[in-house]
Length: 329
Image (cartoon, rainbow, N blue to C red; front, top):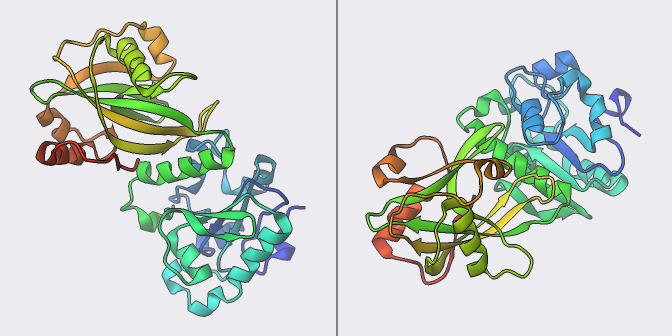
């Protein structure tokens, strides 16, 4: 049963049903939402756009369509019910009973996840500061996740950064397995870095060569295949595993990739992929080339890993780490 206005002592009704994948919990209604009777109704709020871009919804929904979300496995609530001009106008008393109410939602409706849209929503409910992402705390069997705030007041956080957290939640909630993957940080004698360009519908990313490990393959065999397919390189010696990363990204067959990244030295020949560009484009790959350090440090687009520039400086200064370093996204 969807819980509507009669069940919610608020200007904005909860949108809830049993056995949802994700219940999104905002901090409280603002005036835009109160006037519309709908969650995240401020036209400058990125919430509905992020739902679409992260794959939660098949199209861009309007706030007035919020009651269609349970059919997609999604719900909406708030940590505090009182309408205020801004979340900074809330008082501690506004969150009285919030944790207990969320526990009741978890116990009675059994959502897989409750996702707090902003750290302050979680802090208001539980009176503790969270990090972004999956939380150690659970409410029964319901897992908790903290997303960046989608409010226009949080505009200092780039849209791409907000999206990656929404994508991680979307991937985790999708229930598909993580794919095992390997990549190569390929360097030539002058320090140039070999990167491939992936053009997704909503962004372009330059990343290290690599991909999924096929059944029965070793890391060395998988990287030899990927280097041949994507760059036309053969016989390169696999160096140490220097970095690891887990990239959550909702895909048709998997929810992302858990990667090991190896250091590989190459003579600097120009890459000539063995696969056709038609085949490579089915994996979103559209280009491959060497980057000088100056080009890389001047580039203002997305790199993978995101901290690639910083990681290269550390590698130059200290050499390969004794144990692989988790480099994040």
